[in-house]
Length: 369
Ligand SMILES: *Cc1c(COP(=O)(O)O)cnc(C)c1O
Image 1 (tube, protein in one colour):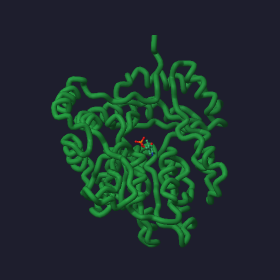
Image 2 (spheres, helix red, strand yellow; image 1 turned 180 degrees about the vertical axis):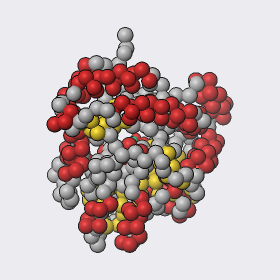
Image 3 (cartoon, helix red, strand yellow; image 1 turned 60 degrees about the horizontal axis):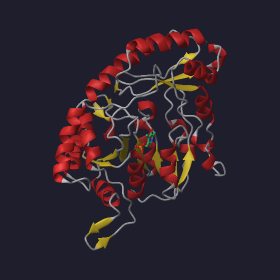
Image 4 (cartoon, rainbow, N blue to C red; image 1 turned 135 degrees about the vertical axis):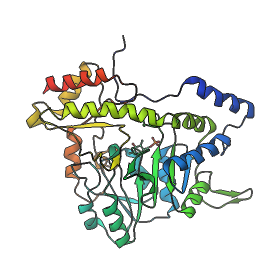
């Protein structure tokens, strides 16, 4: 009966694999606090992400929040309005002021041409997002940062496993955060990590993630509890072993989508650079240009839902339009982000999605407009 297709489905390893880990956890009664599997996951992640220092935490959001805290920033942080609530909340919860910089249409990432005009003497960092796994223009962002003495911390929640000309995306900027939430392309149920080449920052996040406790009798920082437990680490270890195979399955689906959607008038896709970027293919965003397509994004969303295809308006609304930020005095023009948020729809894509369903979805897209 359940023919519904959702935008994503979590990846799960074969149950037997996970049970092997569970048996060991049951025997050791070691459930959390940087245990054996946490340590092993930590090692394997650093290898996989090809980064000097890397540490798993309870979720991506806390990884970001504590990374911002570790840099001891003050004042204003330039960021994107076209992201998940977490990015901005992490700034605000650190008593910093977000300054929204508009995005560019070709890839929905922060527009480097518009960053410099937003820099004031209060600006201390830039927090861009590799949205949908589209790498930001890191060369230009980091050049601006260097010139103005700013930190660059990437929200890489969507970009796990990606490479640019063979170089891991985790190696860029001062630090990067990845999310291993169940809906992401790689999951540890809930989870996330920070990656950095700066030892002091890694060490500070390590201290902050366990209440800022330094020694038995010394609590040095106002930290939080952001520890990843052993059951999460075990899931991460299992799923890491299947990452490539799952990614390759998504690549096939993605290519079919692109091939078919290219032929549909009024539906725009992002500018992918497969020559230089190894994508993880975890999102399939399309942009509905109503005047050319003949149907609005919202009507298309309803039409697909009627046909059991559950897409998402991801991201809509943009962050400055959230109820919680309604009364905030945010600076900056975010009109491109606003327009794109009215056009976007993310289509189902996950490793186990049958390719026939991709064709079915594309048939519906052809017929609806
Ligand atoms: C998922 C996500 C986060 C937060 O990660 P969690 O692991 O869910 O806490 C942050 N930023 C973006 C862009 C995300 O998509």
